[in-house]
Length: 297
Figure 1 (cartoon, helix red, strand yellow):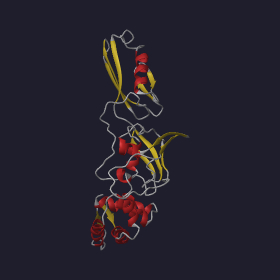
Figure 2 (tube, one colour):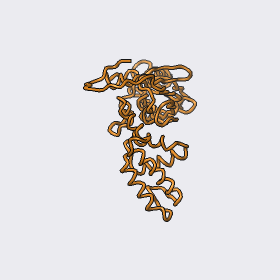
Figure 3 (spheres, one colour):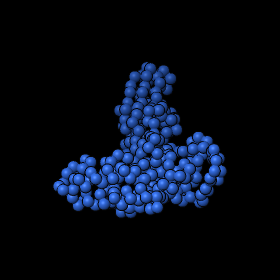
Figure 4 (cartoon, helix red, strand yellow):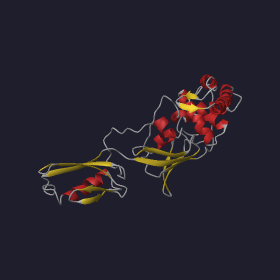
């Protein structure tokens, strides 16, 4: 985290009622060191005399003093392994727990790939309909909140809830009524995705920062866990659950990905999905010359 990000995090965390222990844990697991805390605290203290621009945000003397005081407590805990900072240090030692908080890894959905045929269309998606052959036309429309696009001579064409493959067949039948050659296969028609919509999902349970997140419609469970800062020090990596409506649709074992590269359970998320991370059931401590770990429950 940059210095500015640390300051902004502390301000938001204090407003949301987080304790200093919670802030210590989250900052430490994101790679913030005691030396960085000291540097930010000194900068804030040197700007307490008059209201100034500190890291891009106007701050008065009282606010700077409170933030610097919080940083002082957090810095001591991170530097001293006998205090609450040791919980963050110990949490990093659990195999695989830091995968979603490592600064060297970035779980970001790739939006520059060919749209999967099983991608489900919804409000906010832009669709591109190209017609070539006897008839020539190109249409770009965004699916409305009602789930349709407006097409000249046809009116509303309902596409909400269809996959790309289903929508292709549907528009072929609909456009054959007004465009010559489609029914006789003298003209071709293809529907593809332009700009994708955003979705909101809830990441709950034992994660670093539970809450509601706005993600790309291409996002998967791993992406949601990454944005939530990964699992907490008591969270399970073996039983991440995805709820859709009132039904559980997936159980994800992160170790299957870490050890065997299995991604089949890392399903694509949909609007309103809930990712729930329960507490771990047990931990096993292994010492000695251990080369690798096997995927055992």
